[in-house]
Image (cartoon, rainbow, N blue to C red; front, side):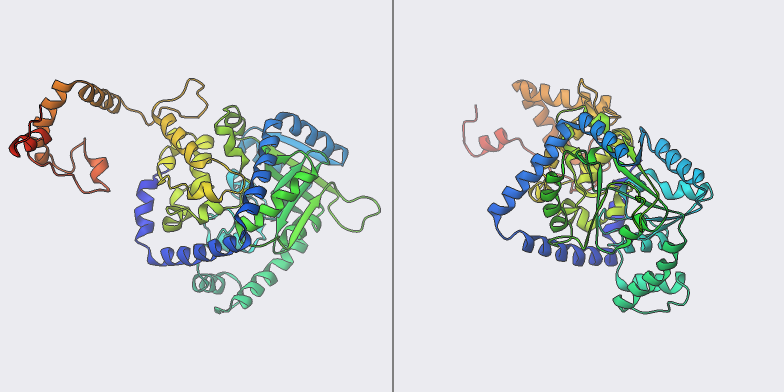
Length: 472
């Protein structure tokens, strides 16, 4: 179970965490705003990006088949996985067949979704994260707290202590350049020793069978070219129709994510090393993961969830996420996008509190580069949690409903629809309502985060009569 309501109050009492997130988010919001100074240009580019993603989803089955065919023409072996367990088994099988025991990994949220590292370690394969943020998290034994900046919850003092403890010969230093150099030095040998590289995919182009990866550190390029074997893992929704579609998405993603006009590296992988080429892997595999995405796709409204390009802008602007951090959500995808994606993948019976961790302020909707109607989808999921639709599109729909709540709302409807009953109930409540303790079953969910309301002692009609008004 998610237990967000228990984790969030703990995070709110951690001053270091609050300070770390406030400083980071203020910087990210300012950088993003600087990248989109012209509102009209922003709206135009955003509409184009949304159209690209909507078009890809409208043609998803067809595009996936085209992607598979083109990738195979290019020499890429394509695998399909319905569940994370199947995807883990596929990746492990490829590694075992190649005799690989050491793996270097580029950044990938899908492998986090699969808990791939745990699976590999349990089966005798050593994975090493090469993205600096992921490397820090791996050293700390933690999960990422952000989909773009995994260790955003840590400051340089915490990282300095971690490196001093875990990296031999590093010593204690708070100099950011020195810390980065220490990580680079430690990872350099891992790239050379790796039997295989594993990466995610930002966009998969159906037209050409090209895997597009963007990054800033060069680790993604090393992970996918230096080892003799490259395994790319992605969700099925990452496909786009053609190369022209990539351009607006590349113009939106880094600017929305980190406030950069473009990332340092844009990698386009269309196959393994050819006989006349001097570098690159000799074998490339693509694993396409479903894990509930087809179920999301089947609902015309919820399908918009799959537009996401994983920029994290919604998190950076969310008043809830920026105060409680990513670990409060427990699952891989935190923040606004996690609140709509996680319940659909994991089930409302498992993560049904996530859609309620929102003020519905619409800040996420205003900055989403592909126009995902997050607030509308949150409301839809809240409704599905207690009263599932006929389509039964959401796993675990209705799991948060209860007979008591159903009867309570039916009673409320009856009272407000029946004048004499409304007058009777009002007279009773104004006289006995204040006697009810805040911990009473009917009140505790409200009073757990709010002050218990106090009744006047007289009804509005009685107060009016006392003032000499004819309230009949």
